[in-house]
Picture 1: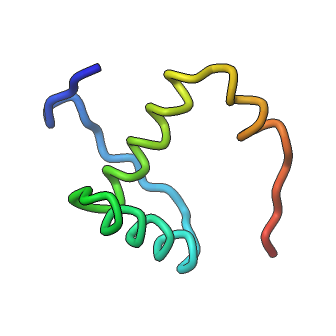
Picture 2: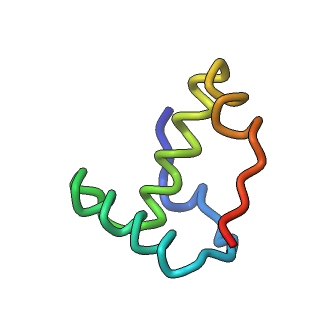
Length: 64
């Protein structure tokens, strides 16, 4: 699956500081340009592996 920048639309999402830190660390560890690319990789992984959806989204997680 290949995208060009013109395919992307900004979508603000709410993240706490630890989530942003996690995404930034993952971006650095895997040579990704930024946290938004990290999120796109995560989304693409789930889209390409539908058998993982329940494992990822089936449990309600609340970090309060």
